[in-house]
Length: 486
RNA sequence: CGGGACGUAGCUCAGCUUGGUAGAGCAUUGCGUUUGGGACGCAAGGGUCGCAGGUUCAAAUCCUGUCGUCCCGACCA
Image 1 (cartoon, rainbow, N blue to C red):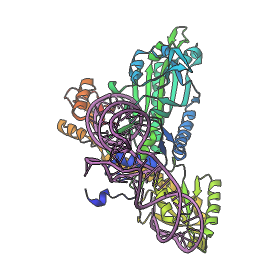
Image 2 (spheres, rainbow, N blue to C red):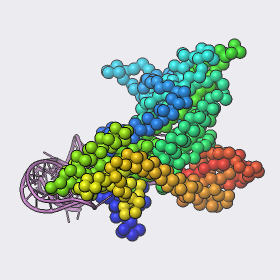
Image 3 (cartoon, helix red, strand yellow):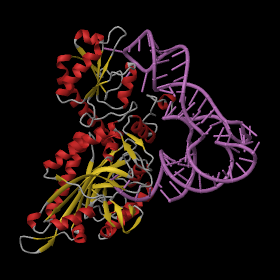
Image 4 (cartoon, protein in one colour):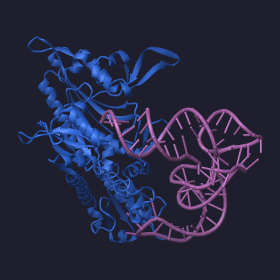
């Protein structure tokens, strides 16, 4: 690799292409999204990072409400006895559950699990609330933290404690539960696409990748720049498994006592990690406008005998705020170039420069973060009285442009292959999403994993009849995306 | 949890091989000059070297343990 390539563009972070991991960690820390804490595997979400989370919450919450859900909150602690009722679920989560064993000095007679997810405690409560088919469906979402005793952690992608939302619903009929599961998968796909500007593949998880205790698990999968896939949200059809374990029964219209059908679905702050990796560049973050804590930052340029730009910037910022924009004036005592680099690193979509020349002419300079330095489209001179409308147009354009870039990357790194050797080669080299007709057999998947470390990310319907599995030659039942996962 | 690396000032690191109680750059603070892509001058402050033991007259340096971080695998949102 040439020196030019390994030379950082900004001093805080290494080039993205040279070492994605180092770039990612540096950006998360230097952009002040997170800080490591004295607690192993747990990060502090700093105000700027929390701003990202709040925007995720805001958009998703609107979508949840629009699909008929309400928010509620359930306890953090789960008595051991309750957790043990759903066998597969326990087995799946047992290795990563943290336990509370003492209250003050007293040893507890029954240990309490710190929730790794809330199917259990919510199922127990639903059992109390449901008597009749008239009580169904229950459509509840919870914004919460959960804890999983992870061995290796990275900001957002995997931390022991993390923030997420978990939706839990109960229905009278299997068909209704399945529809709910798919509806929420679509909500996630739309959020990823339209808000986070992250294109994903939505599909069904293979049996080995299924949520412990679920009948069917669906996911959205994003592709990272290193060719690895990141599961960004899941939606589970739990069938009657949890209803039977936790006794969620009701009397149906036909006077028969039946078990309910439940679903659960979740998106965590891992989605933020996907967004960071997909859009960032050598200068740092590039945050899609809809997710950005700040839409734009004013950088007033002052001279020793002329600081009019500061007051003018504050005035323009105030009117933008009134119009609903999230803006800030950076009037710190620093060089303009220093501020440019800083706000580039933090990924603010638009920078608004205002100097003496602009004050005289009644202009500002809009600079878009998604374009390279020196790109002819990077800067535009805009009259102050058109600022709000031009800013809106620019933000829309940046949102669309970031998505288009990410989409182009995903498409150019998705390979529909029909040749066995090519399939294995693509998987092994982490080329991206490798899309093949697949037999659906666990043994086949395990073999591919052993050979290439790639697994099925999710599956989608087969488009031709009579196709054979590209990996093993058995009759194919679905198409599957294979990739190495995060 | 396996393999590898690391932990010295806010950050990046030097010093450790050949023990003698700490250095650089950047950052920070003050004053002045500057300000359209990471400014400059002068002055100042800041660390007992992750933590705990051990060896030694003496430990950042040698030994043991432990905690934590990063990378590569196995597992998960």
